[in-house]
Amino acid sequence: MFWNSEEDYYVLNQNGYIALAVIALLVLLMIGILRALRKDEPARSKSPVITLTFAGVSIALAFVLSYVRIYKMPWGGDITLLSMFFVCFVGYLFGPGTGFAAAFVYSILQFIQSGGTYMLSPFQVCCDYFLAFTALGASGFFKNKKNGLVIGYLVAVFLRGVFHTIGGYLYWMDYMPENFPASLAIIYPIAYNYAYLIPEAVITVVVILLPPVKKALNRIKGMAKA
Image (cartoon, rainbow, N blue to C red; front, side):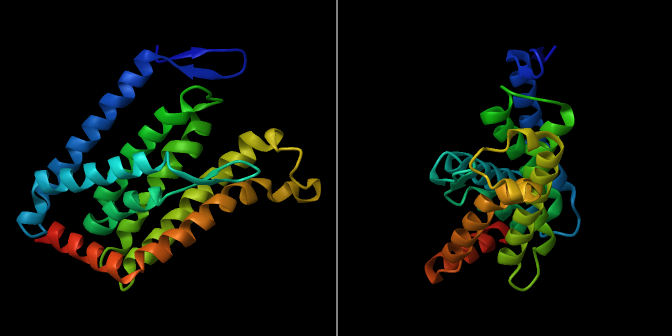
């Protein structure tokens, strides 16, 4: 068994954490193997080592930065320091396949970080973690588009919010804080989630559009394709 049952919720146990860690490692290996098998990419960019290096470093940066909280919203939710960007950046570099796989690994890390101690149901976990954070891989669909980095990032953040909002309506309405206006209760899950997602997205876009940062990101993209 991978979790323990409490009164009205579940708690992940040691076996569950180990299983998730193994799954994350297997997915990372799969990223490199599948990338190497692709026929529509230059030989060097298909290297499992290159793909795993970029994906692994990006996921690690995202996870570390998820602990760097710029501001905690009064209703809940944290504005972090560019954490979502580095997950989206993998998709932008390598496309949706690698992007979704890397984002799924990140969703496992996020679940281990804060979700394993309180689970209401499997679908709640999917909405709050596995589907929501994996959606950040949607940035990969804009890999070769004009302004694809910014547009892909914003679309990915929006989709993450959609899954969080679905989970909010299904599972978290009873947890609405007393300081939230009762007259706006119908939009509570939307307001709760996008109240911290939008400010972080704005901050991130401003940062990545700064000329030195933009130049550095273009150089990294060139290294990934070289």
